[in-house]
Picture 1 (cartoon, rainbow, N blue to C red):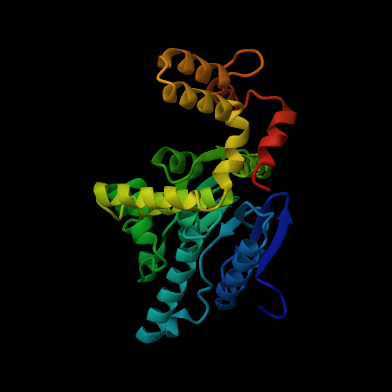
Picture 2 (spheres, rainbow, N blue to C red):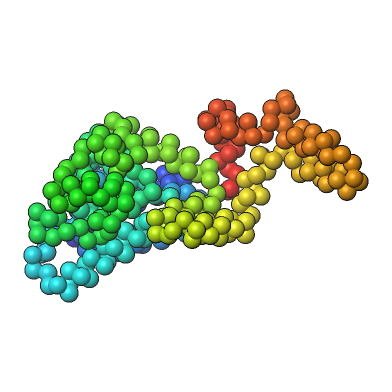
Length: 316
């Protein structure tokens, strides 16, 4: 709290928890207590079974988050600055390792810690008004919340040097070209676009999303063989939750009965061709269309609205 006013606001909208940096008079810069408030909000989100994604954005139309409040920073001791860096890194790691998908809805300036939180999110959608920068070196410091590490992994070392060493400011279009963000929209379309993304994410199983995040987050930390082993471990974990059984019900259709027919045919030492034919027939819908084709059409968004609603309810 700052003057009995929360610096972080929270709102539940549909299947997403919207987290607002709420100091528009300071370009949504984070106060020291903001870190604690963010931890509390994130814990509440994880405890809500209806929430499928967390969205970060800024209050007001000018800024996403302009970093940490610099008041009194010039008096920091080396020990205090070390503690400050570790606290911010713990926060950005919390965002990166959050059990639900995270989206940065960048509505304006994202600098310093604000950009580091954006980098820690799984996805980033920005309005044309967004600007991205690390001005820390000009202030005699460096990014301390994971910026030097995540930025280079995301955009490449050459471009990261340009932003960190030279303080280059990226407009939204260039940030998209560099791979810093996923999409750029007009300011009035930002909320709608993010809500569409949330609905797509909500079609996935909650545990499956978390396991997929774990694999992707650690993909650059391991060699290929270790990464493949880790992927298998995460894949196996999905089957301890019951989510695959729920999600596959609509996809498999009559496949279970067809597979049983194949097994019986093999046991009777009958030619496998009829069994295979039965399996293929079992995978088809009422109109003879293979279930795989139906599933792919759903992924392309070709299913009717009623079917889309059914998809979203699979894992509830």
